[in-house]
Each structure stands twice: as structure tokens, then as C-alpha cells.
Amino acid sequence: MLEICYMLSGAHHGLWRGETLAVTVENIDRDFVPVAWVDIGEPFSREWLEVVYYIMQGEVWSPNGEARDIVEECAVWHTSMTVGDLVIDQETGEVWVVADFGFHYAGRVT
Image 1 (cartoon, rainbow, N blue to C red):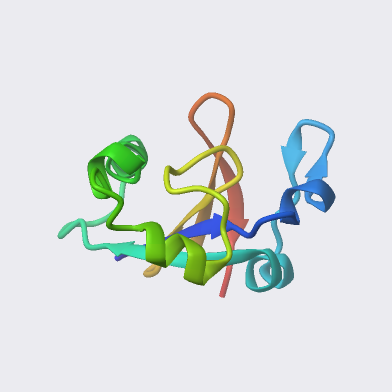
Image 2 (image 1 turned 180 degrees about the horizontal axis):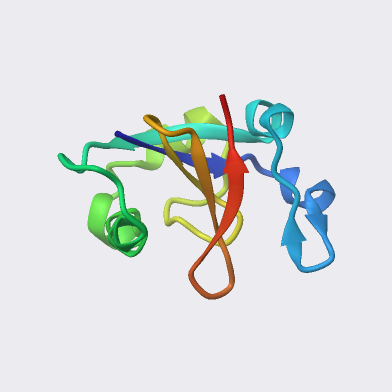
């Protein structure tokens, strides 16, 4: 199971260290909010990241504004997955951050 976490509105300012997003266990709880869970039905591999990115685009998972309430309730500013958002593998604790191009491995949470 993959947990999809979007960065809270305004949180992005203090998280960037040069070109890298400084993600820690503490700031995941503080600066990100879960918006969805994706059951891929098989062991996770990096190839799934691009699939998750695609299905988390607003025109795919909310083509008629279905996610509007979720977005407002979660205090995030976007429907589509974007740079800085997270994919967390619930089995391994591995955290992947959406980067300018692809994903960046941010480490493991426990």
C-alpha cells in the first residue's frame, strides 16, 4: 500500500535546502497530509512511482472536481500531485519525493 501525502499550503518555504527537499520524520507529520492510499496489489518497485504520479493528476482522479472537498479539508493548495509531494511505501517506510524530473529517494520512516 502506498500513502500519498501532499505538502500543506505554505510549508514549502522552509523545507528546501538548495536543490534538495529536506524531508524528515518530524516534518512529514508537520508539513504533509495524507490525501490518498493506492493499493498496487504487488511488491513496490520504482516503476510504480510514475504510475502513481499519473493517477494523482487532477484530471484523472478528480475530472469533475470530486477531490475539491478533500483538498480543502486537508488544507493543501493543489489537486494534482506536484514537486515536493510524497509517496510512502507503507511496508518498507521508504519515502519518495516528487522532484523536477522524476522522484528523489528521501530515506525511510519508521
